Amino acid sequence: MRTRSGHAKLVLTYAILCLLTFASLYPALWIVLSSFKAGNSLYSDTFIPREVTLVHYEDLFEKTMYLRWFLNTFKVAACSTVIGTFMLLIASYAISRFRFAGRKTTLKAFLVLQMFPGFMAMIAIFVMLNAIGLLNSHLALILVYSSGSVIANVFVAKGFFDTIPRSLEDAARIDGASHMKVFLALIVPLSKPMLTYASLMIFNGAFVDFIFADLILRTEEQRTLAVGLYRMVSQRNSTEFTLFASGAVLVAVPVTLLFLFLQRYLVEGLTAGATKG
Image 1 (tube, rainbow, N blue to C red):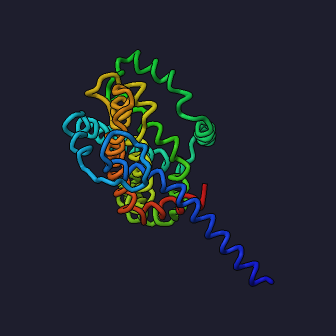
Image 2 (image 1 turned 120 degrees about the vertical axis):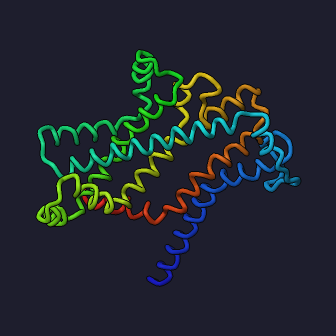
C-alpha cells in the first residue's frame, strides 16, 4: 500500500509540475510564434502559424525607433547596474562588518521599506525630480533604479558577507594590509557570486521596467523599450500586435542570455546569502 501511495504521490507531483510548466511557457511560446505570423492580429485559429515571415522584425527596425529605444534601455540598465552594485557592495559590507550607531535602525528601515511596493513613492519621486529638473532624462531613471537596488538586495548581500570568516581579514591585517586592501583584494573577489546575482537582478529590473519609465520619460527619443513598445501599440489603435510581439521577443533575448550564462553564479549568490541574515 505504501509503495502504491508513494507512486501515486510521485505521479501527482509530476503532473502538477508539468501543468505549471505548461502554464508558464504557453504565453511566451504564443508571443514567439505570433511574431513570425503574417498579418497584424495575435488571434489565430491555429497555434503554429500557417505562414512564417520575418517582415515584422524588419518593420521593427525600419518603421519604428526600436534601435534607439534599445540603446536607451541598455544605457539606463548598464549604468544602474554599475552604480547600484557599487552602492550595494559598500553598504552591505559596512553593515555586516562594522558596528556603528544607527546600524540596527538602518536595517529595520530597509526591512520596512521592502514591505511597501515601489510605485507608492512614485508621486513623491516625480515631484522631487520635477523640482530639480530631471524629468524626461535617463539620469533620473539611473538614480532611482540604482538607489532602489540597495533596499531590495541589502539583506542578501549582508547575509553573504556574514558567511565570509573574519579570520581571513584578521590574517590579512596581521600581514600589514589596510582596510581598503583587504576589501579590494580579499572581499571583492570572494563576493563574485553575490555580486553577479545582485547585478543581474538590478539589470533585469531596470531593463524591463515600464511604470516608472512611463511616468518620467516624455519624448519618443528618450523612451525605453517597454515604454516605446506600449506607445507604439496604443498610438496605432492596437492594430500592430504582431509587430509588438516581435519587439517583445527581442527584449527577452539579452536578459535570457544573461541568465543562462550566469546561472551558476546566480544560484551560488542567492543560496549563500540566504544562510545568514
